[in-house]
Each structure stands twice: as C-alpha cells, then as structure tokens.
Image 1 (cartoon, rainbow, N blue to C red):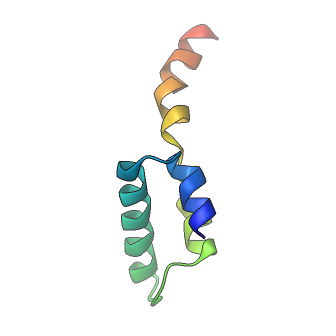
Image 2 (image 1 turned 135 degrees about the horizontal axis):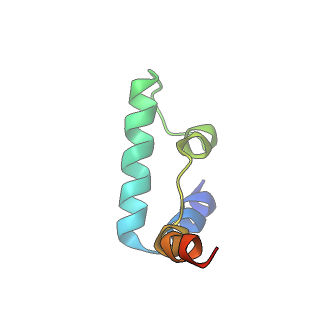
Image 3 (image 1 turned 135 degrees about the vertical axis):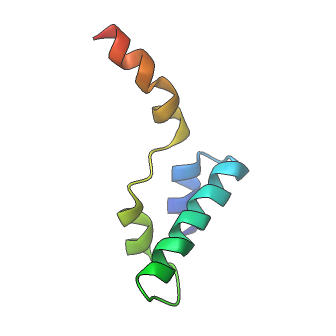
Length: 61
C-alpha cells in the first residue's frame, strides 16, 4: 500500500496527505474500519504531474 501511495503522490508530502485523507473519508463512508488497496484504487486519484499538464495537452490537440 505504501508503494501505491508513493506512486500516486510522486513523493510529495502534500499529495500523500491528500490521498490518505480522501482514502480515510472513503473508507469511513463505506463503513470500513481501514484503508485497503481497493479503497486507494477506487479513489481514481490523478497524480499532480498529470493534472498540471492536462490543460496544456488540451490546448495542443
């Protein structure tokens, strides 16, 4: 699970906090008592580098 979080966060602590916070809220909403790999994958979290360049990609096409 740590590798998944690290990959999604791209090593940025602010992104780690965001991912874990969203995962915790999702787990609680589902009535689960812990964050699982499935919880993380269901978030559909987009890493910062993909979000940052998405506007540029749309302009270029």
